[in-house]
Image 1 (cartoon, helix red, strand yellow):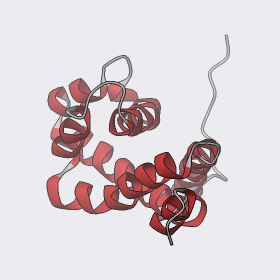
Image 2 (cartoon, rainbow, N blue to C red):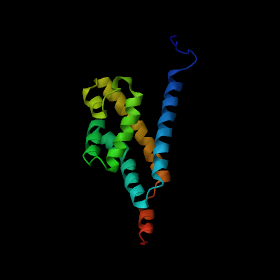
Image 3 (tube, helix red, strand yellow):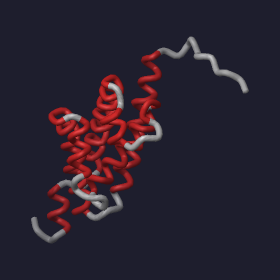
Image 4 (cartoon, rainbow, N blue to C red):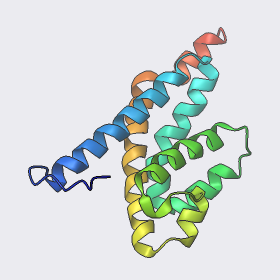
Amino acid sequence: MSVQTPNPNVSIASIRKQTERERAKLALDYVKGLESKSAKVQHRYRVLLVKLPARLHANGLGQTVAFYLSAGEKSPEHDVVDLIGKSLLKAEPPASGRSLMEAITMGSPEDYRSLSANARSLANWLKRFAEAFLAGKEAEEAGHGTT
């Protein structure tokens, strides 16, 4: 078993950009997966995803996750929390093996700040892709025969 040594040619900035690209890809794949759903469902996800960055900023990660979880296990809100958890728990070694709420409530203040920053970054990507690819209110109304 060999020990990998850090590559001196890789800067912290390039590692952050790679992580940012990974978040963008995760968000894009998620939103593209929603395109096959009905206009009504797309609109509901669009509203959730567009509001997510503001909710994280105003209420914090813990409160936002708790609010989304309160919508129920089969809800779009819960689905969004699952995505956030998948992204954050993979990205944060201190949080590995714990649920998202455990990571939020039991981690150190430094862990919470890191989780929050990564959640905000993912939320910004989700918002942009939702605005670009998911049906808005007009499409939902058009699908119901109203103009």
